[in-house]
Amino acid sequence: MKVIAVIITFYPEITALKKMLASLNKQGIDAVVVDNSPNQVLLDLSLSEDHIIYNSQNVGIAKAQNLGIEAALNQDADFICFFDQDSKIPTNFYSDMIYGKDPKVHSVYCPVVVDEKTGQELPSFKLSKLGLPEKIYNKNSIKNVSVDLAISSGSVVSSNTFRITGLMDDKLFIDLVDFEWCFRCIHHNIPIVCIPTVQLLHSIGDRESKVPFGGSVHSPFRTYYKTRNPFYLLTKFHIPFLYSFKLILSSNIQLFLSVVFGQNRRQHFQSGYKGIRDGLIFLTNRKKS
Image (cartoon, rainbow, N blue to C red):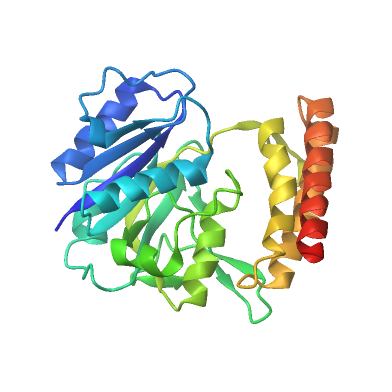
């Protein structure tokens, strides 16, 4: 059974990346590294041409993942897993996440993801009957848990699944890419299962600072996509209206907090304004077409 990990990088710390590749190799998992760095910084990696993709620019998470998925499919992968450049691979990843699984079955598996800096578990989500997300924490569960939405880092997908769901939506660029794809899994009745025995350390990047009420301020670059992309989701028939509407409200609250408490207030305001403007323009154009 062939398993290939797709790793997206952007100016990675080379030593840490080498350790990740070595850890995957010990568990019999090959890797395709897709680098979004404008300059080629991975020349020290001993990977063949079909295992490294240089984009020479930041093409976004979604498109980079798609390039990695296509490369893995071309190499006849049975399962494809996803990691960020700073993921810490647990030693039981293959044994608990992949071993014994049937690659012919359309399926998605995800680990418990833990914030490396705080030690707190990042939640998965179940959807209410109205389509609103409810946080669930699986760290202390003794059984596998069915979830609806999970981040892509550490997830394992049978290759056949992509023939049903399609690839990632590269118009989203970075934010909500994984959740939008999860909604497609729900639409096609493809289960997403959390394996609580596997705990993946994950560093949440791009955070400027903490703000009141427990939130975090990301960079102005991320602010644009966080305010724009919920409008995009409104046009997706497989995503509940209330889910997208809630994201629009929460992203605007986050924008307000970023403008009031962030380090780059003017940039946040400009990015948020452009995001809302472009989101509304996208909605208007879709209605006209």
